[in-house]
Length: 304
Image (cartoon, rainbow, N blue to C red; front, side):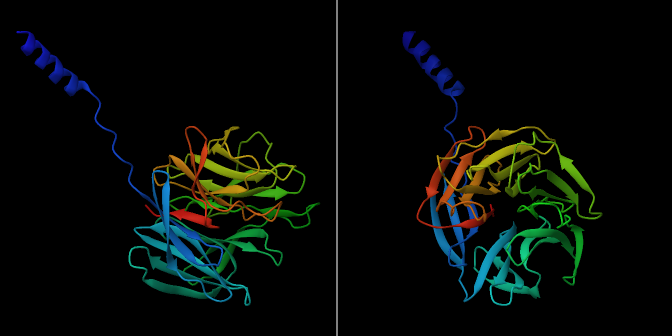
């Protein structure tokens, strides 16, 4: 009888015991290396492995813009001609295809379905100065261009586009003043300001989460320290990610499941050079962990 009761108790405990935690699926990223090439980075837990994807070319800097279905759209900026080509690469096979040549220079933004393309134009000093939408032929229509005569100068941050391509999120920075964050309608150019507490100066990049509810905003304060704050799209103060003291990192992507923020070396022109390596910050705890410290990577996009 005792044995029967013990056996029944053991079976009951097994039935109610939690199942072993399932290992998270690997995250695949594509980022720009210091030599201008593109590399694919496989992240499993807190371990990452980098492999070459698109080789470097003389005088050319490749920047990944969007990933969908295992294909990454990227721009190739030529430092001599100051023009950019747009191409795609199959991450699994490495097969590449060029789509346009000699387009406008700037940060390419592509919606998740690939139907909407915008570009953040840059000036001779390398600052983002306007946002434009590209038509099927590559012609640009300006959506937003701040008045350059504003005292102290004005420039735009890096930006992020929604999956459906209807909205671009970016910040406008005027030296010495808080940076407002805008949602720009890609059809009309109409601006809607995202409510914040007005404490962020010199915003350098804005990244949208997969569920389109949160912005990871990278900004520099008056001491040139770099911070990353998670802000609800609906507005609010948000909360800071916990970066190591003195680290020069900025948010460039979310993981596909939205639980982590991908941090790479800062490419801002304000303050010292960026911190090498690839980092992941947990959205829940806010803590950042280095996962690939030997590579100087920038502008990562999440593939899967």
